[in-house]
Image: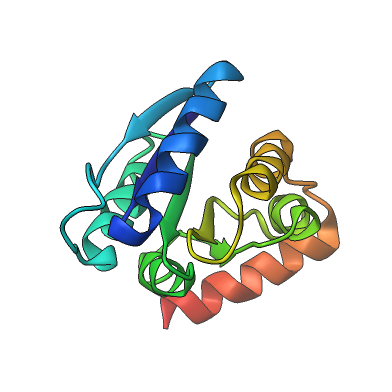
Length: 148
């Protein structure tokens, strides 16, 4: 699985840890920036890069890290076809994929530590959408809302 990842300056340190973790697990990782925590940058720019990579099928899933995870999530969800969510626990990361077909995981680099983040990422990348009728029905309702 190819995973696109990006952060703003506030998520940069956690992003470096997660990239190394994913590579050690054998995943192909597309690092879409930022490349430093020394200069403030704007999370919408990096959220857009990951969302576009997922939409254009350059990556199967994405991970965004900003200070809280909120801005990254808000931005990513503006793109049609993106289902991004902030997850600061392992259950939500797994269930978000299994039930809601979540394709971008958002985390707050100022909120969670690296070991919890690794567990969350593991649950996200190992989860598979269930394709159960009730989940498909709900996703179709979301697509109708998205189309308005």
